[in-house]
Amino acid sequence: MLWKLLSRALNVAWIAFRYGVPLLASPKRRPEFLRRAFEQLGPTYLKLGQIIASSPGLFPDRYVQEFNTCLDQVPAFSFMDARAIVEAETGRALNDTFEYFDETPLAAASIAQVHVARLKSGEEVVVKVQRPNIAEAVGADLWFMHRQANIAEFLSKDARLGNVTGVIRDFESTIRQELDFTVEAKNIDEFNQIMARHNMLEKVKAPTVHWEYSSARMITMERFHGVKADEIATIREANIDPEKWLRTGMKAWMLTTMLHGFFHGDVHAGNLMCLPTTGQVGFIDFGIVGRFSREQRMMVLRYMLSFSTEDFRELASILVEMGAADNEVDMDALEADLAEVYRPLLSHSLQDIDYRHMLPDIIANARKHGLGMPQEFILILKQLLYFDRYAKLAAPTLNIFTDVYLVDFLFTPAAAECGIDLAQVARLLQNVQRRVLEKQSQ
Image (cartoon, rainbow, N blue to C red; front, side, top):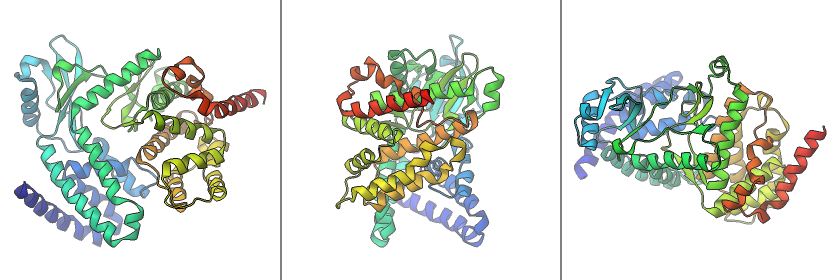
């Protein structure tokens, strides 16, 4: 272990020197040099790059745009390595398992790459194969990151306020979970089971997992032939109403979140697909999944309902509950600040809102009052920003925060069956109904 850490330290130092000099010398090309350094540093840093690419508003636009290549343009590893891993995991020669296996990957990401294949039964599938020796490399990188975070918090008040050590802890939890592909495969199955339970499987689904050809380092699953969520013109060409399609996908996401405490935590355009032949919404890549306890689910539900009904006093109370404030909070001031930050989301159509500043403003507002935003809630807000982007393209007049269709499942017996305590949210639900009636009368 000591030798691996030393070897990794030397490698990181060399790459930092190689890209650090031009990075300092050329401000305009800093995003490019930083992205190239991350690619050279390997999977752990690429994962950080994906976080930057997936967080518009938290990072400057030029960095977000540059790191977008980390989402689906990561350098691939060799077919020989992929073949060796597949054969080691299945215990069989590649040709004994698959009738066909494309040597060129369909896509490559920080932790794995995907190959198109065909089973002996003739079914077309995709095989997600983990990068070789990634677990050891990630372990060494995380060891250094934890110590760098401790030093940063010791030296910088901003780092302490930003809870850098907590960010690294959450990052470690996420990436270690992603390294076990059986976890992702179970998440896929769970999502499909939820859709089936609520009679939505004909409209929304994830790929079917072939467990006999899946393990901790590979997943074999149904191949989706789909269109990315932001390719609205192509969706229309398939004679599919993009607004109706998007609302169906959003409703499914909100249902899993509120009723089951389970949500897809990375709905960027490549992971949310329109399946033209059936018109279904396809969710893929369940490596990042958020989970809530029953108590947290109720908090999320209260948060969203109080938000959508402009009950900012209730919203302030929820934020204090979840924020674990170290000091006395001025509730009147917090309520007023929340109204200022959130009201534009409710009173405007999406095309009139600049969402790049919304998440930073929400986090800054919480910190102003000494509140911390739990990572799971920030993750939810990030997904809503993704949906906002698609809504701007598909339905510019739609407001996802006031559309009752997206939460109409709360008015069905399924809500109580899933453990929702309606007594806690009765007043908020009545406010939702009242707002719907007011809109209908107008």
